[in-house]
Length: 175
Image (cartoon, rainbow, N blue to C red; front, side, top):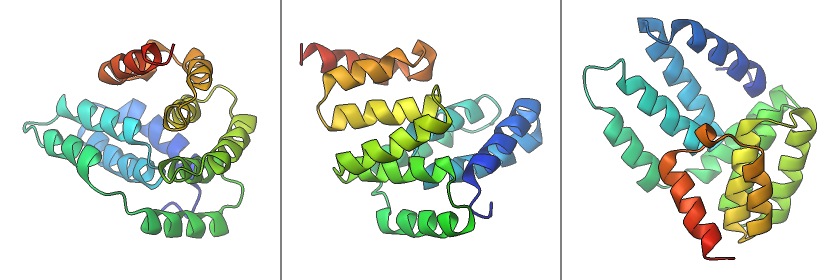
């Protein structure tokens, strides 16, 4: 348990993973980071961790994990409860706001998602995770101009190749 301090925990875990990516500790760090990202509905980051783990795993167990990300129902009420608990413990944590924004996007509550993401961007103006969430929001709200703005803050390596292709097709259909 990270005591609600999602941002602090993420920074520590990412730093540890950078140092232990290839050893046995890396697998445990990935599992904890994976859980933290799931509380924020950061599917792209969960996918990235699962794919990275393949390089250090003797079995292709990650295939099932990838399938589950795309097919399982998100326990929105459970995630909201966890975010509420985290906020009581660490008010103002921008990763909690990011989690709220992704949930709001999934529920079609676009104005709420924008408000949360704007707050996140005040703390981290060039944060990859926030711009990915902004891109997801723009696509969900069918706002190609906003999608282009979000994409302009991302590097090509920030988006999975399949997602980049889908974005190009989506944008082409709206121009």
